[in-house]
Image 1 (cartoon, one colour):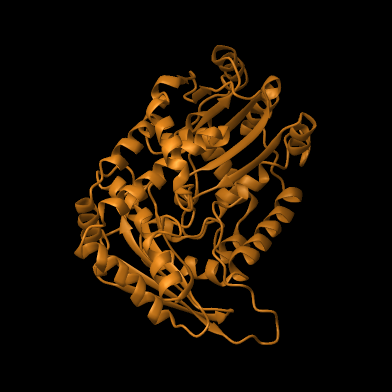
Image 2 (image 1 turned 180 degrees about the vertical axis):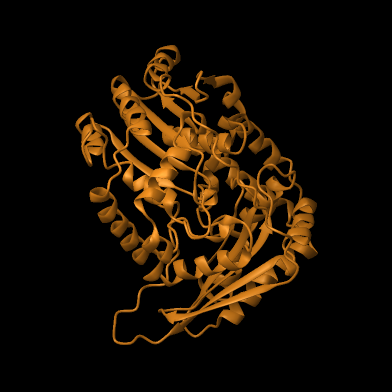
Length: 460
């Protein structure tokens, strides 16, 4: 839920006219992308874009925290760390140094649904990245000498992100309460008790199960000749044998039949409140309306939550909404806010729910609805200037079934009506589907109290 994808929030409306007109003439992805499936089942998705002499190459594995089981959480993220520890041919941390020596930049991230490795590099050096990625897909070196220290690094990362971040801690409690059956209830980084008990054998089995070419795909965007790059990718990846398909995730979250509440009492500077509702993802006919609803509520400083809670009533430091549009399984629609000193979480909760009730009672004005949709469209078009973002979109939509569905996003957003917003708010933002999490600050015991700030995106 809190892996917030790039969206329209905060964009100046002044960009809209230029960018939205660009959207009307930009060629659809379906006309610009070349797709090939190698004999071993690995898909290759190529988007030529010659505006700069660079290439973004990403390798996506269809494994994230949703593929983990109770008692073994955090393995996908821990394996992401280990992927930089070398092979028989490439020494520990040498991957990064090789990319840097060739003028590139590299990183990786793990989400609930996938693990992605990426590099941006000069066009004539993209083969260096492909060769390194193919090598560590099959030849990763995992031993006790490397595993133990890296597990400690991940445990320290968990302390910084969650145990020393009150809001990060609250979000974990929210997810663990909103979900009772689906693995989305567990944190991406894993529960500390699971990290403590994980073994080298656990990690090796995770690697062998999920890091096979038929459970992965490559996305490249940038300045290359598709035929030549495809030949290079087929050369390095094509000889890797396919493996058994990993076990599917069969868990389905049962219908929630009543409001759930969780309270977290711990040292913190300020309280915090988060309210989450179960919603479908992009495969639902209602997905675009939920996107626009999130933008109406929190699409920048002119949107309802900021105007009402931050500006007019001066209740909160910030107030926002998020929508899990691109989650692989049905996700959450969330509202959240942090009270200003002297204000209570009860006041903020009531104000957030009041904005939901307003949407249910009456549609937004035509001007407000248009502003929200133009903001979404403006950001979507503006972001196309980034090769990384184009590749990211292709990967995220491919994870959800087919990268071609990107081209349906803006038409679906444009078609949303004010009545659609009322309908989805009434249907999905229902009390019985609601989980409310509140952070209750306790006084410091002499140590510096960690700030109550929103956690970041996917775990890197």
